Amino acid sequence: MDFAEELAAFRTRTTDPGFAGLIMLGTEQHNITAGLLLGTLKIRRVAFLTTPETRDFPQFIAGLLGLTTIDWDCPADDHSSTLQVYRAVKALRKKWSDLPDAAKIAVDVTGGRKPMSLGLEKAAHMLGLTTIYVSSTHWEPESGKRGPIPGSQFLVIPPNPYKEFGDLDAAEAVRLFHAHDYAGAERIFADLAKRVPDEHEYRAQADLAHAYATWDAFDLQTARKVMCDMLTRDLPANLVTHQTTLIAQCTALESLTRIAGRAAGRGAEALATLANIDDVLPLLGSLHANACRRENQGRYDTAALLRYRCLELISQHRLARQGVLSERPDFTLVRARISDFEQRYEQVVRGQGRSRFYGLPDRAFGLFVGYMLLAALDDDLVRGYRIAQIERSAEARNKSILAHGYRLINQEEYAQFARVVDDLINRFFAVSGTDRQEWERTFTFVELT
Image (tube, rainbow, N blue to C red; front, side):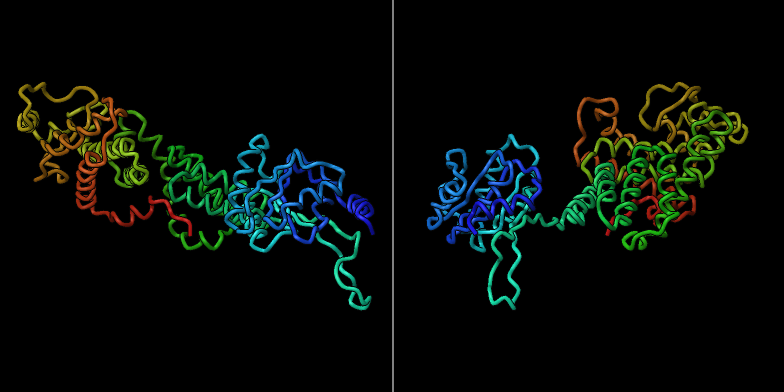
């Protein structure tokens, strides 16, 4: 059977996949499969990677088709090594930049030496190109003939197992998840859940990433719904190990959605919420865990802002237990218990180096005023504690561009402030008689295994 007949047969059984580019290997046997592909597929860019022994192969294929090689890329390097094939494919991908869809560039691994085919396949995998080859039907043993049957060639586009099962995409999603880029991880996991046969694991991981992304943004309603819906279904094996923590986090989110509204209320409702340790702990947990994640990302200004809010919330809770609401201060109850409270407060204020005293605050007050009031109340949280270091360490946050300044704080400044916050959190848990380790476990986002 001559080439024209084999080409006609190949065309009848081949549907053009729509490739825009095709990279092939030169062969010493003058294999005709490259001619079958070029004579059947509509290709805009063609390249042959050859060795000194196969330099004439492109001319042989052009002769079969009645064409010239003038528009084909035929680099003169010796492509007998895996490394050189990879270099050549990478260079072609750059040269063919007008073909934006890498998957529309095919590499034919039918011919060539084994190291060349291996290099071509590796390059295709790394650069996102599509691997193809031409196969044939072979004679049955009883025919007494050996080898492929002429005219039986057919195009094979093997599925990419990495794409089919999403291993590489999943690895990237896990990397983003561990880097606390939950929105990025969610996008990849959600895509995998649509196209991978066994989508159960990816669907659950997409939901968890979505819940964490919205929790990070303090969209508590969405985080609660997504997390709790996820837990109504069977979890994949890699999340079952975290099931206890995930259930605790879902419960915390349910509490947070109820508490946040009350804490943002007015008067007695806000005061009662802030005075309740069971309401404050979930709020504090969300703030502190978020600060730790931003710290891990090197986003020290955002982390400092969140830690600053932790300090505020702790003081607000301790003051609320004494009947004082920081945003609408009323010291009636305090004065009824401590008749000289204003004098005590003045003593604390002057002890911090203030030359002027303006009396008890009659409007919303800031962080350090709250701690001076706690000192005047002789609150267990600050008894024997040098509150001056709170103001001093918080200065770094105040100079941040996210607060009142015009620059980013550095790691050392942040670390000094973080130590003060951690010290006060430890004191807070000690005086409230609650378990810090259990609290941190609940609000620390799990890692995927």
